[in-house]
Image 1: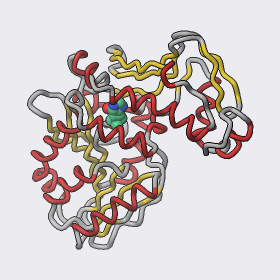
Image 2 (image 1 turned 180 degrees about the vertical axis):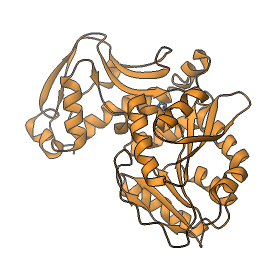
Image 3 (image 1 turned 90 degrees about the vertical axis):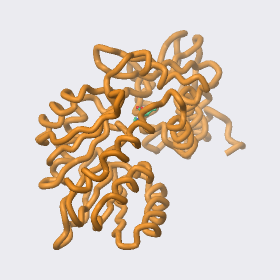
Length: 321
Ligand code: AVJ
């Protein structure tokens, strides 16, 4: 909308009612300022995330794909015939294909995602390549209770799939809550869960501070998105990407730090930032294998087999619901 004056009431009005607008305004009004990482993923942000997954320093994606390639046969055995797979997030089509290719006549695939567009695209591609598979996208927020179709008569087990260590975006309390809700949907079946592992902080640091600056661009895209959607006037060169490992909480924290004292306007409201003041944009928790299993048990799962890469960078867990 090039004719809009940034920060004017008119510019703010069209999107002032969005969830992003409400959460951004709330973040700016709270101390310390912090916002959900889910707002990274507009179309520019999703493309930047895909680029992150290809970076030499960002080991999780390729490591998990390696593990899934190795364990797919065993997973297929554990799942049994005619499995009904529920994926939390529409995720990577590559990862689900690794499972589907190993499974005995998988019956149904139900990706759950808030973005209907994203779901429709992945569903069409999978239907083409797996003609016997009932692809059933479910539009909804998987962090809340979602309504799934009833299990089919004569269907197999319900298997949840939550790869990528996206569980690391939740606080431990939120993770237990998510697992409790997932467990109710999967009762009698299991959850296949990817979790990034605690490791040398230098390796973690590099993964979130890549030399090409893609992670920085991904983080800064949040402000760019606010400029596009909320009529905000963030000067992107006045903000620094800051990511570090916090060993006591076993998490990467990402922040956007104000390089100087400045004012910004969002949805027609003005906010002050002191030099060095930050907006906290993401936590990415890391786990020990035992810590992850304990968390799952707290939520009522019974831990099963765990698969890792040789360097113990990443883990994939079979958890009985
Ligand atoms: C998609 C949440 C697993 O935490 O590693 C990548 C997101 N943030 N680089 C992660 C992310 C910065 C990613 N997750």
